[in-house]
Image 1 (cartoon, rainbow, N blue to C red):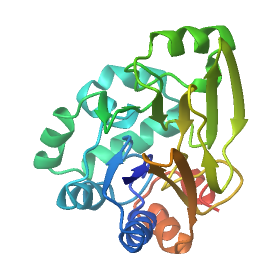
Image 2: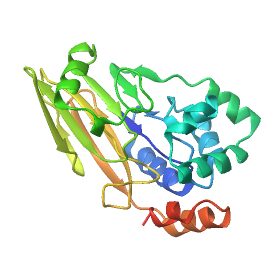
Image 3: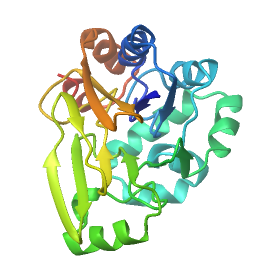
Length: 241
């Protein structure tokens, strides 16, 4: 079975449409989303509508969590707070109700899906955790593989015989070793932060136990111009490039 894992679309409809077009051409058996479908980008309503139309199961990211519990804004910087306020104004009541129904994690074909950090955190960044802390998470994790987003940075973390190994996750295929556990950061569809401005997502082959990172080009200028037109901080338009 070949499955697509997407994350951190952040209201970037142009990037999402190109990723979904690539997914369609790849003839995958299913797709799941790790949250942060909203925030930073200009078309959160259309992104959520498309996710729902395509029946793509999604979990709650930290930007969805802010919609559900505004007290979480205290953990964000002033620029992000402004983005969240503008985003909320762009969401319909139906979409807000949908967001309230999202769960912080799910098990998808045997893999744990969580936005930030296993077992169920939408807000914890992996880069804040030591190897000792990661080792504790791996020991408690029942699943062999966990897919996360949140940092927008591709990374593969393995756990083998008590040892934690961290490495960047390159474009193309990577084979997973039998007997090891993994936390895999799938990067970002809508706002990559890994030095390459293409949209990113991962294909997981459950039979061959390989993952493949796909880099997908899209029209960045279209999204950037919409960000500026709607009055979002121009930082989020520049960051796409």
